[in-house]
Image (cartoon, rainbow, N blue to C red):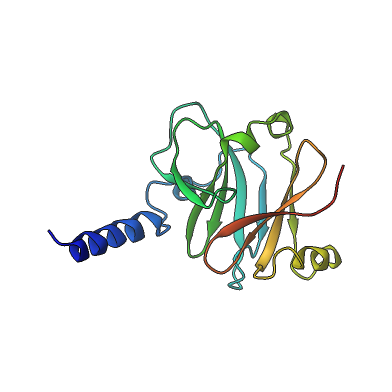
Length: 165
């Protein structure tokens, strides 16, 4: 087996894993009854997308989740909380064990807010997220400083403002 064969095989496997699909994901089932659903054009494609919080038992959902804090795909290994973004192009699970395990995320409703791309407040965020497409999602934190979850045209990213509590 040559280096080229290994490289091509590895790239094919990576692309297969990272392509979002609706198969075997919470998007296929939709949000659980009584769950608050936020809508917006989160990927900037002109079609409405949905976002909801998925609280679950420690049993894993058989799907990969994107961790925008570390720019990595992760197995959903017993994380009790994640965001589900149901986009026209696919389903994206957002997860970060450290961020979502803070007490503010155990409260109901979760500290989420849609930030429309044409809102006056969005202009201040554009300096931190120049490749931002579509509507953003403000994530509350224990420190009282919001973070922006946004789509850059290829993947979701998180950016912090330089505000201090």
